[in-house]
Amino acid sequence: MDIRKLNRRLGLISLAAACACLLPLAAEADQARTVKVHYADLNLTTVHGAKTLYARIRGAARSVCGDEPYGIDEQRAWHSCFDGTVSDAVATVNSPMLTAIERGEAPQETAQLRP
Image 1 (cartoon, rainbow, N blue to C red):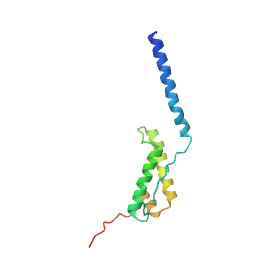
Image 2 (image 1 turned 135 degrees about the horizontal axis):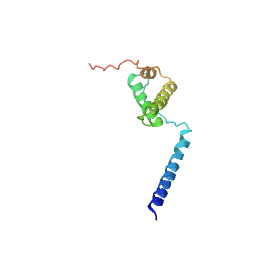
Image 3 (image 1 turned 45 degrees about the vertical axis):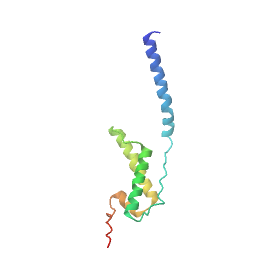
Image 4 (image 1 turned 120 degrees about the vertical axis):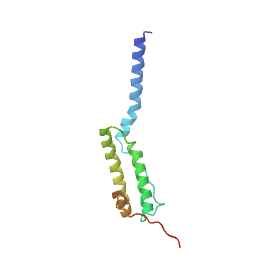
């Protein structure tokens, strides 16, 4: 077989395989991804409980939005996804302490002194 024909055939096979792999991703892009974040084990009236939930929410947002990209345009889109996802989740929980943590306004947790 001619080497040019072989290279062309391999190129077409690679292109077809790449397209087949991307189709499921395109279908998923149209659907909103969701991740459940459990927090029944946390006391959201404490700084520690709210910070723990905030960390869980941010982790779930990374799961939904993916890893932060390197390109400037891609970073803008990622930050829009990430920040919006975190803000929506915080608003849904409707906890004053969690909202304060998101805004950077939460009081610092003080160490409990034992007698």
